[in-house]
Length: 484
View 1 (tube, helix red, strand yellow):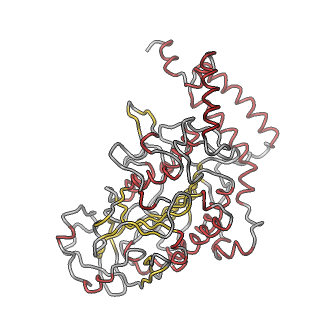
View 2: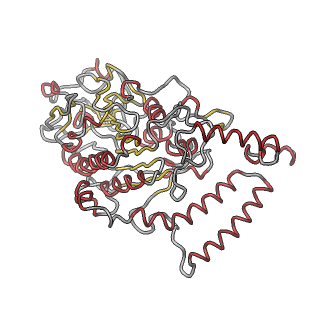
């Protein structure tokens, strides 16, 4: 391509409009219209056509239980399985479905009933395991989907799929899409913040990669910013030794001038993204220390989250920080809690995992509700797949393990746009197949986007000649049964 054509190809829409009189008028009119129609008038950036309709939620908090929580030990009550103890899972139920290599070589697939007691709670009589006593108290605030499913059967493609809409790495994550489409509501904090909490069960857990909160082909300013529990809360946020705040400001001003000249020369949008990121980092030097300082939180709030809230990095502390981020209008907050991969010793490890998240999740919902934030904050809880009813390894009445199972698993949602106190979908008596109202993970992501005022079919980005979407190209849509 010749230099002139290449320069034209690289021009951004904003760069083009800024150099044409008629375009300037059109851009001004467009922004006036957008300001009048945008439900959230405090937002900066984002696409002028969004939201597509009035949103019920302004922000979202995603609590991801990485590893695959066991649905029949937590939410999917299957009392008839007690009669099936150590009997083989029928072929009529398995239906030749794909298995992992961890159990495909087993000579038999003995049914392992849950050893935990269940009770009904709330007005809808939602069944909840004794492992989640705090969650049981808030079921009237939740919509529980029993029938989420995915095609992925191993951790990395499964969590990549649920976070980015594709099993292969490289696509934008959900939080990046929201930052790109809706913009930011707080100029001093990122639109998308990620935390990885500590966990209490076995020490080894599935690895998490920062591509799970990557912007992919979107401008890099939309990627998630990881908030750390030790050292600098954000990497490289502190000034190096001998550099004070005024010196850093002068350095950035000079660097921004050079970057602006670079942009005017080659029109690369990433140059503007780099300027924005430097400025955001400078503002975060003040906003982040204020965010993570919980000394001003009342004792009743700290007691609500439980004793773990005093320890940085715990799920309880992350949930409290999520509430503090939400009240500062951060658009999307995601907490990853690892250690839910119970192939063996489930009854030893699962109770510890539940203890990590049960009170903290309840506290987050309660805290948001008491502050009037739940009505416009969407909260999501779930993993990347479920577990098998059959045992992996040795089976006893008191202990068992479960392999990965992608065909049905639970997710709950609460807050803005969600109908409270409902249970959606049904699985068969073995919690192995969906028998009513299946919900693909694309449907779940379409529901999240819908609550934030986005038609998932109309949010796309041109990449490698394709209009890339979070929810793929097949026919998916919001789960109407759980929408308020």
